[in-house]
Image (cartoon, rainbow, N blue to C red; front, side, top):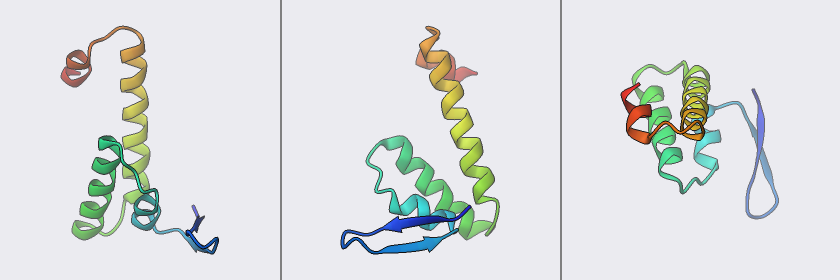
Length: 80
C-alpha cells in the first residue's frame, strides 16, 4: 500500500511506511492515538506486521461499533 501524504504547503510525499501514514493523520480521537502508539511500539519491537496490525485494529473497531449499534453496552463489548 502506497499513499501520498500532503503537507500544509501543498507538497506531497509518497510512502508505504505505516507509522509515517498513521502519524500523518494528525488524529485527535483517543482511539486513533492508541493506534498510532501501537504502530510505533510494533515498529520498534518487531519491525514488521504493521499492515496486519492496522487491519486487525480496524476490524475490531468495526465489530465493536456494530455491537454498540445492536444495543450491546460498552462494558459488554469490552468483556467480549
